[in-house]
Amino acid sequence: MKINTLNISEDFYSVQGEGHTSGVPAYFIRLKACNLMCGGADGSLMKEGKATWWCDTEYVWRKGLEKPFDYLVERWQQENILDWIKEGRVNLIWTGGEPTIPKNQRAIVGFLDWFAATHLAYPFNEVETNGTIYIEDELFDKLNQINCSVKLENSGMSKERRINPKSIERIMSHDNYWFKFVISTEDCLREIERDFIKPFNIPAKRVLMMPGLDKQENYHERTKFCMEMGKKYGYTGLTRLHVSAWDQTTGV
Image (cartoon, rainbow, N blue to C red; front, side, top):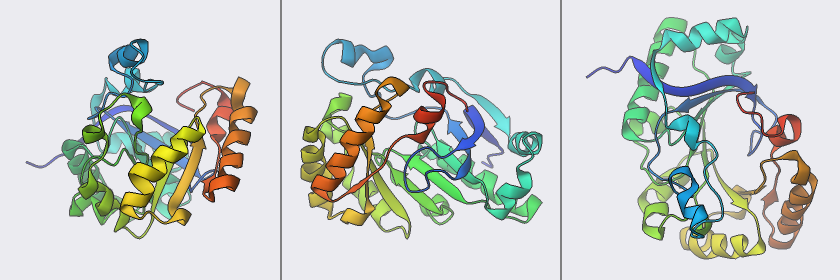
């Protein structure tokens, strides 16, 4: 069955605030649904003491509307960025929820094929994934960059749900992949090395660390912590630029 819609929870023009392409103008397309429930539904696991954080986009990715492919082109025309997207000056960020859920994978592929046929151009595509679902060839070959943010014990999710060796190894076969770990304490680094870096032989140069922060009031303290961990462990320490610029405001 041919797919001609995207189930979009929200979409907006901004700047990539974290990871390898920090600072690059980007258009975010958040697709509906996720296969994990970090922190529990409405933060239930966090309230029970089984998790230390709750997915702050749950209230967004739970909802979504099926939008025709030309909806995005109309949005880009409104923002006056259509030509920049065609030229690769503005990256497309496919996020969620989880954009690699099979239905979402098929929808992204359908959109990119349609856009290439109708606009004779191919955008720079990044995907933000939790690394638990295998990315099929049709999408894998169309991605310019894979940003994998695996979940740790503090998410409240079981190890079996959080770690899928087949999908992690698949990501590592891409030419441009990055593992983005959110850290809050040094224990996070020990877990990351124990469960991910050493078992999968993830190159240190492919490891990015982000501070666990979501508001400006602790931005500098948390960023400094991340930098110190980068010095101590030899991984790349970054920050979250969007928090510095817009605090807890979403959709910007």
